[in-house]
Image (cartoon, each protein chain N blue to C red):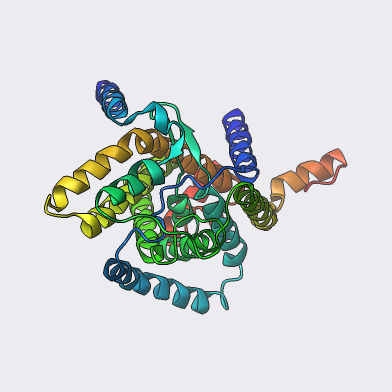
Length: 103
Length: 258
């Protein structure tokens, strides 16, 4: 328990220390691709190029929304296959005794 | 126990719903198009290729014999795709980043299939979502797919063999998969970009810059992984206990029934 508490406190201190170094008002809510990856790449003479299919502005929001919907649909579709649970023998017996269908 | 399982189910469903409907912009951790010089891009393709080939060979071999793998693989692939393009705001850092999802997939379908799922997800994101890039695909597959999957799977199987509870093992696997992914991203960037300042200096700088965002996000990924694994396991112990561990699978099934 003491070890866990020490670990949590150490992690919190590390988080606060590094956050105070890294945080900047101008960079609020930007992704780490911009604040870290592209920042250090720029400093070392490399910059991000446009993607093959260049989607910009609200079209990118639309693309992300569609990706989320399509991904969510596929996830749900296969989830149904994976999780459809066969009723256990005990449940079937209980259901039969009560006169209801189990499953 | 029933109440805890119910809460986990509600939490998992909420996370999945938010993920599916999330319309965030491309704020990500994948290495963007054009960041890596051509030689380094080719190097990371060469490093990742054997793992992807091995996973394709496994899929070809097993898809004929084990029909049960297909829905679970489809579900894990979709989960990796949407989790790895979900920007999560981290209030302590004021930035956004995303979990990887590969540790969870590795626990559910094994590390090779998880690598395949990550490769397909990263390819689609690079092509249609301006998220990552085609030239940096090899490096991103290696960090998120290969290292994220192997770290998560290794930690999970190791802890389970030491009789750790499933929730704790999956939590640690999620944390390890996330943090290992970002450590390797730092390594890829530093090895390609370091100048006269030296590799270690840039590696440490990038790694420290990731910490404010990834430290809490790794913990979130741990909880998400643990919730998903326990939830699926309670529903289908014979599937969710992991194909690579038939002995553990039986023990886990007995544990759940008890």
